[in-house]
Length: 102
Image (cartoon, rainbow, N blue to C red; front, top):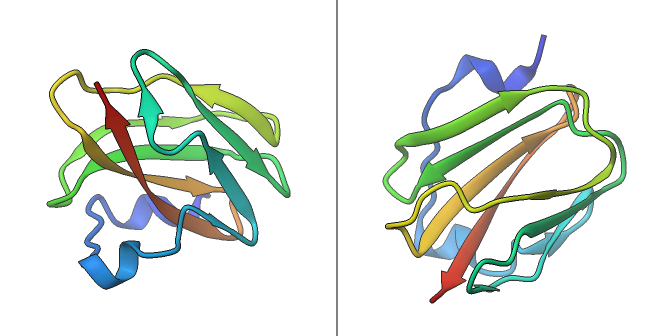
């Protein structure tokens, strides 16, 4: 079972968001996204679960599936400019802030 299913909300303060875009385990790019770009995920191991959250912790979209360690994701919400993505390989989970510029 995926460890991230136990919580349906994610909370991050401003300090938590600084420097989290590219760290060990998983990288996301480009960030910020421009226009209709898709988010590229590059992880050390295959991702089995991901979820998009608003900054106040509301779940927008989640998916459990066996993905490769490199894949792209579309932006899930036309109204938000700032979201948080949670990614898990089933053993670890990572949260990353993502920005979209229009």
